[in-house]
Length: 174
Length: 370
Image 1 (spheres, rainbow over the protein chains, first blue to last red):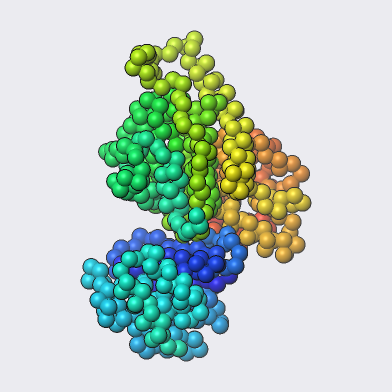
Image 2 (cartoon, rainbow over the protein chains, first blue to last red; image 1 turned 90 degrees about the horizontal axis):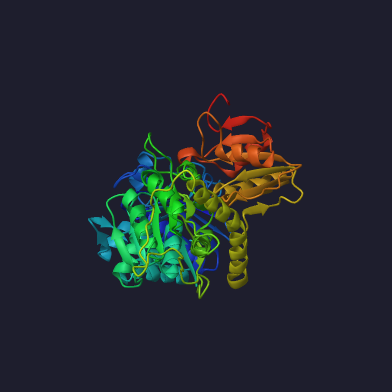
């Protein structure tokens, strides 16, 4: 079972990113669950969502404590939350940033905010990060790019979302 | 069709396919997605149905009662304080023998204010004459909702059915969902005591001490008959759509020395715990109770029992533990866990089994253990 924890702030689309990722994995023929942790959060507060992907039906409902992959949509969350908590020794990290490094961690970076702004993907003043991040995760091998695009098209009719995902697929760097 | 959905959306899709004529509902976290989706279906013309946005849950059930007595299929959804607010009408719906179907998204009761999963809300309605089923996956939420209409409206039942799913843990998780074409799985509703303007009758009139108990017995008689109807409906569902359901879901119980009895999503987590325990040489099994009313016959003889209650009756004990003692002669290790959405992992459940002391009670997370 491959377990992913997504850190973001309320309103940035972390929950939708989890659902898109599960849908894409599902379109790849895998079993997947997307499970947001609903705390007493509000817009701007740190939120966390969980995605599990497996070849077998998934029976676990509890929170992910030892993720294989950590996704950080907003770097400022790292000031208040230990986003690396429980990350497996060989686990990966994807950060929405032009550059970012952590000692002893396999870190991927991509400027999701820049990609969203370039496509003018902005809702209520916030750049939409949940569709481009799916492209980056496809490049990292979590899902296929075909299923990523399919999932995005199923949930959003605006083609800019697929274009943003394709851009993130190209630009993500390790 | 194979798709992916939340527990709430799965319930809404099943209700759309069942085609109620009246939905009366009031939003409450975490079920709001269900009634929003139903309102959208009605607004978009996808479902031809009267949607009544009432001012309270008491009115929601009252409106369902009024609609149902005309012989129309009715649905509502609620949770927690909403369910308790409609308590009087919940009793009335069963007493009036109206096959209303309700989704209840299980949520704790305040104070302290809490929107997360717990079963005490529905357990407080267990003596009302409603049938109650508890589900553990998005697929099961959909399947149980379809079956609920057929069971409630069966001529040998004619009692309301409550479909229970864990707040957030199941209502908001996204899993795969295979929808079906129900065809004639749910026959048209035929309510023998429906209002007929050509034949005026009194409803809910004064019923004296020499008559009232007969109506109560009639509810119990139908509740007993519902055992057969549920079994037949679940068999028919399996025959048509391939998915099998029982009164319980048993996992590796055949040769088990110790059985974990639980309800809802914890029952799935318990299956993972059972696998881990088996790897450690403990012959464990999991029995997930699906139907609370009618309470099924459970065979727990010769096995140790660890029961997890996501509920409590203050001054008595875990409600499920009490039921196992009274109805199955079990002397379970009673664990109170998951209240108000308390995190309970498969490791925790394996720990309960390893620490079991028959006849004792453990409040998970409370130190010292009591």
